[in-house]
Length: 281
Ligand code: 13P
Image (cartoon, rainbow, N blue to C red; front, side, top):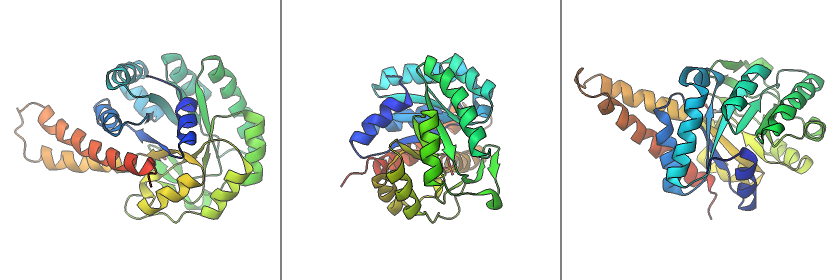
């Protein structure tokens, strides 16, 4: 069913696994992600940036997620990723998104708390879940950027205050990952993640999932990661495949000849990620 983030993360917590949160950049990428989750028999989180939501249309995204979750018989969450403005969050909630992220990570703690409280008040009235971020994850994600100098690990003591004062559903942590890192792999600060998990009792979120080594996935899930964000790897897979195809397909052949193989390639990557996120023995 079409559902909210806190429901799927609660189930993930009971099973010590993570739910994959995959960024789509277009309506065409959606079936690839949802069908992969169906084949793996897990819930899935579809994420869009504010830019993608405006491009595709919020209500179009909501409708497709609702109808595909019904047809596939799996839980689907539609989540707004890295929104920095109250108006963007309100627009997504009003259109039917079931989860939002307010990214106040570049603000001083008190201001991040105040703005997150404002978001929570509106979201809770609509049974919408809220993720927020503390510390600063590096790299660039669809226009949202942090330079190396700005990167800041999440402080466990600040996390306690932040979670108590806001009542968020999930906390995005900065533990060494970077958005958009697809040519190399990340060195994760496991010690910091352990300290955060011991300090706060709520689902934790990892950003920059593309750069995480396969062998580190189990370790971070065992340390409380319940939502695992992956974007760039899907984008790169789609773009590489379409470059290959557009180079030689006939210009008057149906467009699906160029699109279906991209969907299949992304489906395969998503299934591989979900297998890891299940955290099986
Ligand atoms: P990547 O694009 O690096 O996989 O990160 C995705 C993400 O964290 C979305 O917020």
